[in-house]
Length: 314
Ligand code: ADP
Ligand code: MG
Image (cartoon, rainbow, N blue to C red; front, side, top):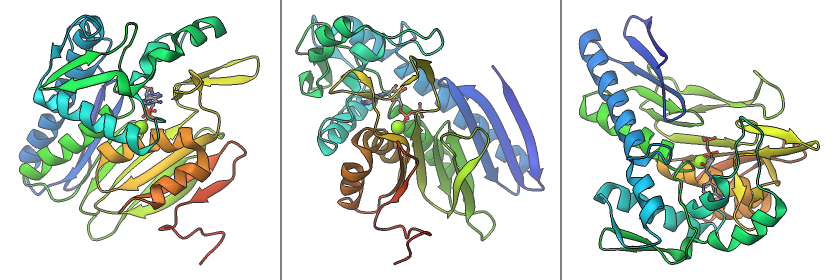
């Protein structure tokens, strides 16, 4: 486990750890260093708890139990997981099926580190196993209505973990903090009376920022095709899967959603990345309190109606 702790200024504590397969950062302001450290430690404990519950790679997680048994029987799950599964289905419905945690039956056959992808025949045989409508949720149980299904919460669990972290910090009496888990962040309050300046990674230039936005008291998630990918015949094979094709989604380079909670911004950033600028922004513009920035697959930047484009004011 990689850990880092630093006191960025007199009363800001910054702590980082690798959890849930990503870098988690907690920055918080407190007048009491001992209590700040205690609150931050509680956040990391919560992240590890969620990882143990929801990782499809941990054989004794609840998700693994579902993936192993739900084709055969109704699998009982915790209220917490049941509710997150219900929320996942809500985002599937909102996004006309772009967000679909059953993408995993094909998704698990990609390995971005070893440059492995399923062949065309495997994809066409298994595509029918991707359909959230075959995920049956009843009385705290989960059942797959079809053989060969799997689920993975990789498109929503980090946002959920960030929301849980913010709740813990609030209960701890913290009023100013930033928690991020990979591309999902949430800001509590502001930064000593000023907004945080959050940079959106340039999708094609490493270490460069495409644009920066001042934000306070909000969540922001970015999904990009540059996070986990490899090139195969000059094609970018990356970790966001279009449920209609079983292949990496092609319409966007990156999609960012800004909204009140990170569970929603996480699921929606994955959704609109797949939907692309036109349908993706239509969806965001139809929702209250949500904004988005999409960089399409030619590098053009699109903004939702609540954000004024700097290039196109008014
Ligand atoms: P990250 O922050 O991990 O880059 P994103 O929010 O961009 O994550 O979501 C990508 C992750 O979502 C993938 O690694 C995978 O676990 C999951 N995922 C991929 N395609 C879909 C999909 N169509 N619906 C729901 N989840 C998906
Ligand atoms: Mg996401």
